[in-house]
Image 1 (cartoon, one colour):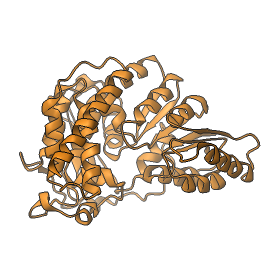
Image 2 (tube, rainbow, N blue to C red; image 1 turned 30 degrees about the vertical axis):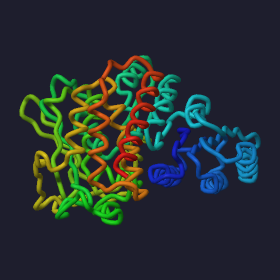
Image 3 (tube, rainbow, N blue to C red; image 1 turned 120 degrees about the vertical axis):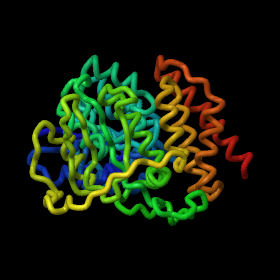
Image 4 (cartoon, helix red, strand yellow; image 1 turned 180 degrees about the vertical axis):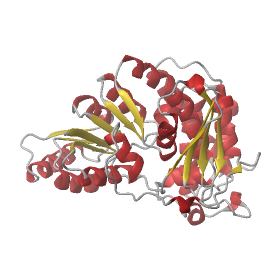
Amino acid sequence: MRTVAVLGATGSIGGQALEVAEAHRDRLRVTALSAGSRLDALEALVRRVAPEWTALERADDADAARRRLEDAARAAGVRQPRVLVGVGAGARLAAESGADIVVNGIVGAVGLEASLATLARGARLALANKESLVVGGPLVRAALARGGSLVPVDSEHSAAWLCLGGRPAAEVARLTLTASGGALRDHPDWRRATRDEVLAHPVWAMGQRITVDSALLFNKGLELIEARWLFDLDWPRLEAVVHREARVHAIAAFTDGTLIAQAARADMRLPIQLALSWPEHWPGLTPALDPRDLAGLSFEPIPAGRHPAFDLALAAGRAGGTAPCALNAADEVAVAAFLDGRATLGEVPQTIARVMDAHRPEPIESLAQLRAVDAWAREAARAAVARRA
């Protein structure tokens, strides 16, 4: 029996992680849940799951929220519930709950602290929070060197994990991640796409920010930065292609000329379960593809210049240091402005570019340094949005 903490339990990844855990009650027991600010949703999950530990990052009334969550846990049969409320509660839960595996489904750069806390106590990190590696890749690798383990939950990185099979980076000639192309892959003028058009992803059901980033292919740039740190590969050996059918999720080319590809249905429960079961492959909730489902697949290069947000992400990844931290913070602010109707989609990469033009990358030294860069980039992005309003 493996104990599991689910961070971001009220989100898309968190919900699917709980679905996987419930399908494998004989192997997995969820002992800790965290959420950002959705108190009602978290309370309902506590009554359903009965975790010993619960955490809520933001509450209008911290004491009242704590009482509600404690009462819900006792009603579910937990004798001595532990409830954390306030900024940093998710990271504290990751550090103190003692769960064997921590599923980090937190959205945004705030998830980095929880990832580091998980690794610091030697637990397995099932990582769905891409910002942990985008923003703090060197810190995560340093933490891994001291203990703990990391299994990626992103569909493309889980696929790459399987393709590479733990082989040394020196044997890898190229790693290719695939992109469906997002909701706007055939849009005549993506810069003027409406909110509804952007959020209508043709393949995946995801949160709003990642769906916007997918439409801009910005998300694929972030995934390449992740892959650089996950697999210790330099930039000339990383690439992305558009694969509309979303059947093949990663392809590894080795120095001997061998290609290994991973193919599966577009279902996030598969990589989530693998992160929980690794190194075993348990019976899953996702049926396998038939070989005939792979007929007629297409793979297309990403057109140069068509996706400026993707280009900005690659440039930040190659620059390294604090550049990806500033990049991610600027994107979070710019995408929020688009979703709120304060900016057009075309203005999202323009805002990011303004911030990156003003940023001077430095080598990453500490979590405190990254917090300062994140705060500066957010303020710079807000100012850029305000000037355009």
